Length: 90
Image (cartoon, rainbow, N blue to C red; front, side):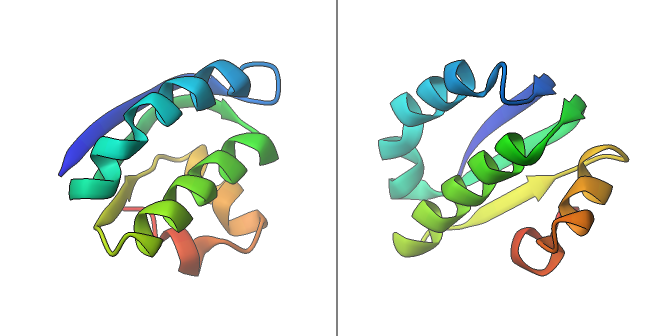
């Protein structure tokens, strides 16, 4: 399983650059799964959650493993958007 660390701001202002980096690594993730460590995220908005959801959807469609390590900023944002059961952050 591959791993990626997301840090800092995952907001509409920064998401395009992060999404491009994730897209470059997606083929590897589709072959062996991915663990996203978002424990150092400081700010997240709906665009950041959408990116994580999109990655999970692609990984699930490929039949690979997906894991998300959240924090006290990410986890409540996921909950507010009603995505806790989908993303199940640790």
